[in-house]
Image (tube, rainbow, N blue to C red; front, side, top):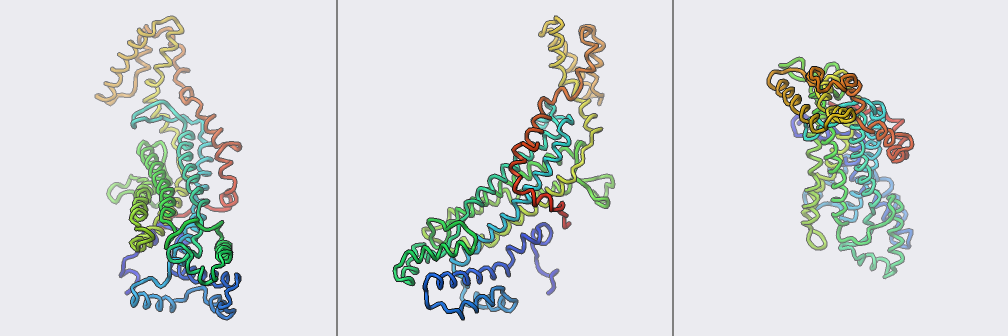
Length: 463
């Protein structure tokens, strides 16, 4: 059968990058197992195990990469034995290597998205736009300030993912239930050699040390901690993409679109936020995948049960492929965000008169008018305006109503200046500058990633 005759995961085929797929590929997995056996043999010889010969070490060294033929042998052995051909000492240590390497891939990509949002935020730090609470018009913010909201959530994800990566340790050589009993026999009770053996293994694998306690496996709590951090990023991705979808509906901001992109086969005018919708779809999977890891961790009995094996083979690669796919999409979207100032202005013109009423009341009070009288007069005009807008489709004529009411005559001359949108965005420009500026927290957080950020082009979508 050809490749089109069997199921192929779209997560790998359509969405994730080659670099993340390579980490979890069968060849990388099996070759890492061999590398671990090679490291163990060298370490045992180094600490004085004479049974390990130079010939055996060289044989391991010359076969570190698993060939296609070797995969057939592995498959045949597993069919006969109904058991993995590798022991947990190898598979668990390999999984820790894969997750560490995958974290090294996704962290710079996340930093790049945050940096792109910071540039966007600074560019639009003082462009007023309508704020929303309960998805109803509220006090104004700036376009850049909204980008800062998104970036802060992503920065929290960066913190969490960095934290779980910094806590990663190796399982090392711990024996069947983590007591090192078999190694006590091998080294005739010399515990210093066992400790030295694990130091060497950690050094070769690039880990700070081993977990203090292991059973037959490293604790599945490790997987859960990583999954929690990545799942939280999945939730952040949905949050941002959903905002973009709402703003695209209002035609005030949009994701990039290809010149040949088709929104609907029936409605030629449509330009759907396809990228953001895809983020919400993939993010839904990632944001809930931690539940699987929680169940796997809590379902382990005593020193280990094998019901963790099959699901981890699926979930560990998938949570990283999902994270990678979301980062590709976010990189593409944030680099190409389009703002429509004219549409923002039109939207504000419909709402600014209402938002400015508190300022108008204060101005009237300064001119000696009773606040209660002013509030009541504005309330009545506002209700009539809203009714006309909803029932007749009229534009917001609240200011015209005020200009036609002699009660407001003391502030007629101030009305135009009182309606300037920039009066209602508070400290948004300052907040954005302080957060994204060269001396701000984002610049400092991203400093170690700047080499990657400056040297990496915007990600390209596969489909």
